[in-house]
Length: 398
Ligand SMILES: Cc1cc2nc3c(=O)[nH]c(=O)nc-3n(C[C@H](O)[C@H](O)[C@H](O)COP(=O)(O)OP(=O)(O)OC[C@H]3O[C@@H](n4cnc5c(N)ncnc54)[C@H](O)[C@@H]3O)c2cc1C
Image (cartoon, rainbow, N blue to C red; front, side, top):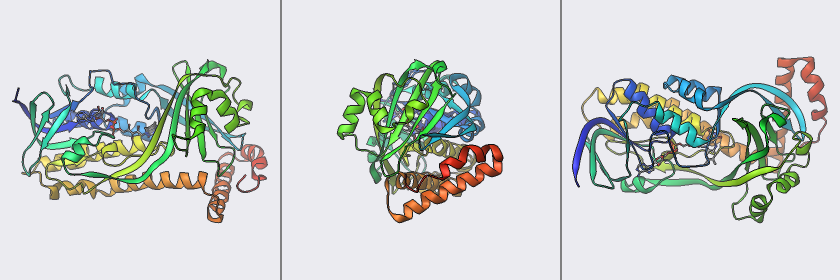
């Protein structure tokens, strides 16, 4: 079968968070958009361990793109996080966070899209040019548009079709582990907790516990290789692995038993190179991946969607043609560039702080610690002084 469907202004390929948010914001502004996804049934997305919570900055971006109410309705919100450093409660931070499994986040955004916008199907071919683009689905359907947006996440097949390669910035940068705690949310003496590794140089970053409905969800982040025996041991007996890794954790969590399964995802940092193509733009993980440890992935993809929807796509559609010269304005956008650079810098810095043991990193750790302490003293006065003073006595790098 070979047929050309309606003509569109923009064809967005990939209905993860990046593609769905962009397509919805463009449609709301009156742009004729087709959003195509290989595994897209409305309100559903395949089980996939990805970002499971976000904070107030990301919520503000979701709201700006028109998805605030949809995200608020599908997530579990918390107002406070207990922060534990060196095994001790350092402080309780007023911080709004929203948690849900990634497919639920994506499903909520998809459900809020105008009817008919989301087209199920795998895009198999791209024909790109300075004026007109055609995407061809696996079953032969053809969709024509002035601009194609690739929001295909980690998939590389369509990038390769466009002659674009992803350059590894740091393969196997980190490891993300997700599991549900067996005890229900009400058994934990905090609404949410971030528990930093008890020691430096140990290749572990932090454990975060946060509620999703009645369940206490755990995300554990570290700088380990998925092939290490430690990973197999964690899968076999997660409670024992947690106790060994964070001996003082049980002081803060009464019950460390884990309800399976333990999901493990290696994280590669990579960025698309040579992206200048007529009629084509890349966003989200398709352009640059993010490490979950500093939690910059959602903010980065929402910044891409926001800049395209509010600034670039309206300007591009207002003039004839869709040359690579026009599209370069997006990759050169200072807001996007700063966001991408911040994400990468934060990922590399967080790894250095956790893993490196040289004098420079020890000095940085001490500086951060003093700065955190000073900030809390200014903010909370004597209450902070009382809770923080013992922590200050720990030696550097402990
Ligand atoms: C384990 C893990 C934990 C993370 N935790 C955090 C966190 O706590 N905070 C944070 O900010 N970020 C986190 N991230 C990063 C964040 O999840 C990603 O940056 C984000 O999900 C990327 O979204 P996306 O829309 O770019 O890609 P995706 O969500 O992967 O969407 C890509 C879509 O493209 C579709 N597709 C692919 N190829 C085709 C094709 N040929 N035709 C049609 N459709 C196609 C796929 O079906 C998919 O729906 C985490 C990542 C991982 C892996």
